[in-house]
Amino acid sequence: MSIPDIKSVLKIALGPSSSHTLGALKIGQKVRKFLNSLEDVEFNRIKVKLLGSFALTGKGHLTDKAIIAGLNGYEVDKSSNSILNEYTKVNKRNKIDTGIQKISFSKDDIILDKDDSSYSHPNTVLFTIYSNQKKYNKKFISIGGGEIEEINKNGNISQKKQTKSKGLTRIISECNKNNINIIDYILSFEKNIYGYEKNELYRYLGDIWDLMEKNIEDGIRKEGVLPGNLQLNRRAKEMYDSFIDNLRSWKLLSRQITLSSIYAIAVAEENASGAKIVTAPTCGSAGVIPATLKVMMEKYHYPKKKILNALLVAGLLGAIAKGNASISGAEVGCQGEIGVASSMAAGAICFLMGGTLEQIDFAAEIALEHHLGLTCDPAGGLVQIPCIERNAVGAITALNSANLSLLRKTPNKIKFDSVLDSMMEIGGDMSKKYKETSLGGLASRFTC
Ligand code: SF4
View 1 (cartoon, rainbow, N blue to C red):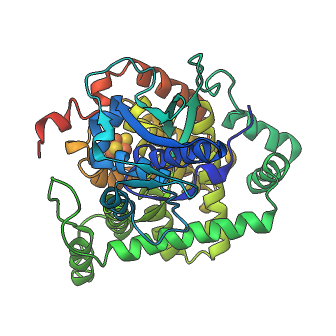
View 2 (view 1 turned 180 degrees about the vertical axis):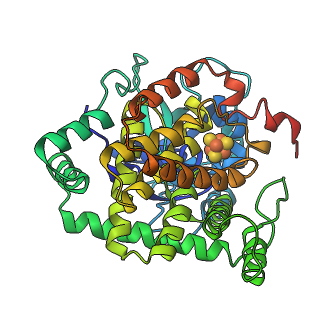
């Protein structure tokens, strides 16, 4: 299997969750395509059943509404509406508009089945589509980072875990053997495997970075209560203002640690509010990379091109994690989201500071190693507690991991690839209570 495309890791999405919101939206869009491919068939009803984590935390993540919005033709880049508004439109008219036909809809057509445990993947959705002549069944899973797969009639799912892509160790050895720097290596596989020209890729990453900066700026400006039953107040603005007021007398730790934490919280709050966001590698962990790269840029005045190269390095690490392990909280817990985000950021910071490839591996390894076992137990099924603060902690770990790696001259015993394998093993053994179901841990102690 090839290394996944960097664009599939760093991409524009809508918060609050890449698997539960963006993935659900894509599933709706895919079913819409299927309906429209059968031009002569008149459909009269679509029943949707959400299972597993989709059923348990789908309400807080807008999973049900995103599926209906996708069926109705909603697209992140083209629609000015929000998912919620699109759903409200469908619900008011009691019709899903596929662009070719209008199909009757009632909110009772969506069932969140919390008791059915017959699923093989925690983010599963079943469709029963009725026409005058026959009934069609469709089954999809959302595997993390906004990626989805259809399960066929034989129950076959992704081949992704059966063949691994190249790991970081092999990439580093190829770079060293052929005397290629890591950026040229990434640009060449993006061109050779995915056909992306260098300029196109930099343009894409330029948009990604612009949105990351916008999310920080918006997040430190906005006030108010975040959506959902937790009634959680935004904190980034208050913290940022207080930091600026006390700048001269600031005694608490370093400026970069403090600012990166505030920036990470700002982006995570934007995500929780359903804003347009960059998956890095997921919506829930979207704050770590922008926050750390922003403080590095502010401190060392790097030109934008250098930050885009750092995003390439972060994207490569995320792509390896996605191809060889998982970036889904529902599959391996938060180690796959904040843990992977922190390792991506650590590698990118190390790159910015002129670290060797071995030091980049070490930085990513440290950051992920110390997130191993991290559970996903969001209170009320919302990407807020612990997710928002967890972005700040992931950012600090990334900065510290890069620092530690830059101090080392001797080879590191454990490699990033091995920690990814460990993450998968631990994720496999982790109780489903701690994998985005909100059935245990923090989630069971904070009820709305
Ligand atoms: S706890 Fe972590 S994995 Fe779970 S929703 Fe929050 S950020 Fe995502």
